[in-house]
Image 1 (cartoon, rainbow, N blue to C red):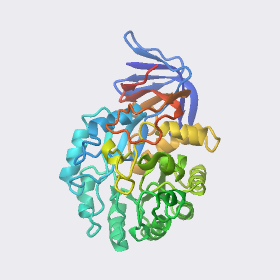
Image 2: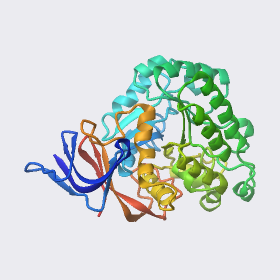
Image 3: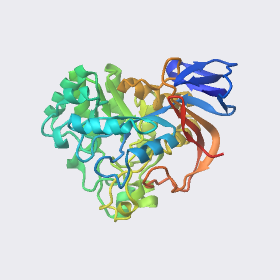
Image 4: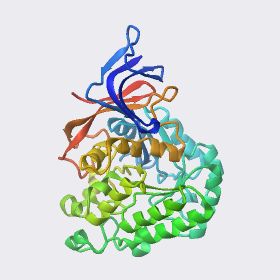
Length: 424
């Protein structure tokens, strides 16, 4: 048994914010002040700590199979646990792609051997080629959490329409990477912006995102199907989602910590470590994302954890891959960039990281309640830590190295078992 005493429980899925005790026995929970456990119960002093449902990431790349020199299921799970995540949904742009039940089943079965809950999306189209919708029913039956060709946009509107017509009745969302290559000269950098000028590049114009978002929201509204706009990054796209959500609650959007924390100026300072797809844009776009989070237009924070090897990020800007790791810094960035400035409350932040993504992807997670899985994160919201290159991830491609952040994860608990314990 495991007993956490005198902890502040923030549990937005149950509308709770209280100081209480939490007793975990064989993965089941009891929540009440004054709890005691039998002899041999492990005791955690929760004074000064926040307990919340285990965090959920709906957008991670563990690079397994195909690119395990960057990350694999084991190291990705370790990075997740260190960041307070107990459930992770993997993207499907691996090799071979997750367009068959066999590949999906292999990932899910190996994921069960890690200390966290690993789910995976499957591809929308066969081979991620954008030409033919995959067998979504078979993939759903094999356990797909949703469908995405993340990394590639679905350029053919009729392919998207056909996918939504199939996925909608299955109750599974389609999530979209919205970058029209017709508006991109060099990816990973804001088009015609300050950073592009400094590097002598043209970059990725903002139209690359919002023109596709406009088209795809229209199709989703017509089909009345669940749709998620991934890693939103322009003010125009935020406004489009806001208008769509006003008439259709099936539309959702996710924001990454790096898009609400950084602008294109980071590319000038950090080089390829700040190269991401879609790119970091302007302060006006960053604030539009934050306003979208404030008013519920954006209801999910997803890391887009994207590991790359050091030698890859050491290449010149246009040859280096896009992406940064994010599982180990996401909670802290949410506290620093959203809660501490007063944009949102801690309860709202926890909802963005737990019950909101759980509801959209129909996961048995995201709330702390009796009878639910005993998946928790305990963290100190006031204590600070300094980001170093000593990550649990196999990769260290983060532009935040050297920065001091609030929010120290003390314990990550999955099914009542401590899977990560922080220092100090």
